[in-house]
Length: 188
Ligand SMILES: [Mg+2]
Image (cartoon, rainbow, N blue to C red; front, top):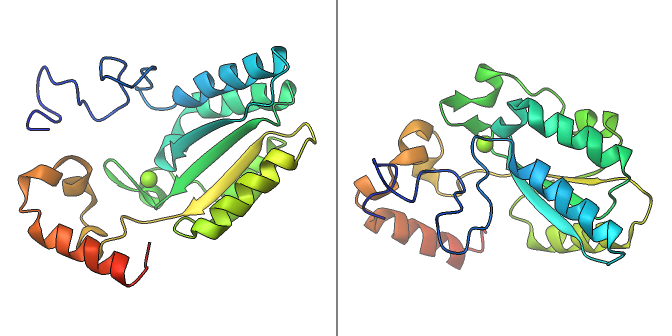
């Protein structure tokens, strides 16, 4: 962790197959979904019941590869693919609305022939329900789960550039206190 985001580190800030347990390098942004689409197609071809889940950020939707992969998923009727979109309103260098506004994300995925469900990203029951419903839905449509999220800790919410890269360079005690306190109040 002490080398995070530094020169020569394995922890570069994006998924990297050099990190033990990470099988796919999915940075630059936008490439993880393409891999997920390939895995979902493979599961279909092998006639398995496997589902494939791909987690993407809202800022990541700025990448053209996301929409190329989505076109492919609809064309090949990958109803075993779930794209989870973490909509926290921020990307690396600012607010998504100010960098490249995403507009109506639900409408965009519907236009790409996805089945779409929107939930609060911290609502575990809603997440479970959506996963169950998606798994049971054999309608030929890939799925998109739009989750409204945030960093979950009050003092982190509006200092995006710092927290995007700098977690370990600030004292973590108040963060841990806030996190535990939030758990006690069942915010998450
Ligand atoms: Mg984001």
